[in-house]
Image 1 (cartoon, helix red, strand yellow):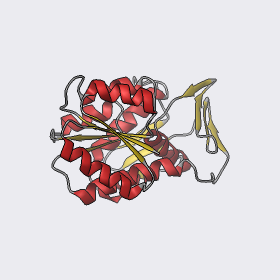
Image 2 (image 1 turned 45 degrees about the vertical axis):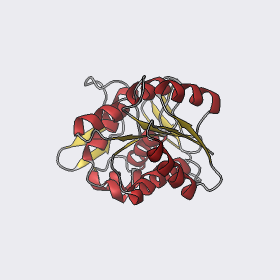
Image 3 (image 1 turned 180 degrees about the vertical axis):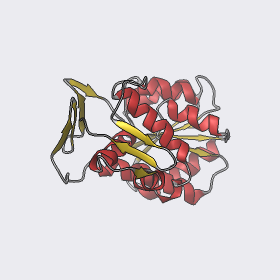
Image 4 (image 1 turned 120 degrees about the vertical axis):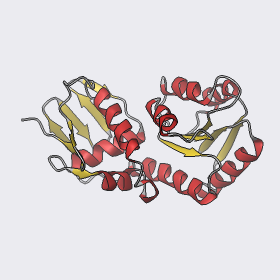
Length: 230
């Protein structure tokens, strides 16, 4: 297990490294003090999880996230002093799985890291059913492969977990709170904007958020529903 921590504040990086070792006692921690170093270390070390500061020597965390997402679906957690909803949405839109603002509570950091682990580990659990198909959409719960027709859809672990939760309850409106708890954990039940961003990402990957996507339906004031093909 390799954890890449990119933060130019050494004290913050050390706190995060300590938290990572509490969860993964045998993990290898790789540190970077700039965006350039973070990209180099990521290419060299093949990290299993990436924790990014935003305001660090260039390129900044946003650009590092964008570059990593060109080649990898590795879990990414942003750490930043930028605490507005717009900052969080921007980070999530670029492909991050979670966002935690500084200064942060150490216990909350551990909770967020555990949630990332939970999502990754959930992909190793035996599937309750082998496969689901609806129209040109298909998902293999054993291999975690999602396809639209003959085309494979690349998803992050968080995107896959959200899609799987919706598909396993196909036809049923799933409440915001339930989806947030199942995918991100009970500490994130108020972060409805997370769902909005990830649903938008899923719609784009499943065929475009242009009115032509009919897989995920918004239930206003309630949540979201996966709609089987007629």
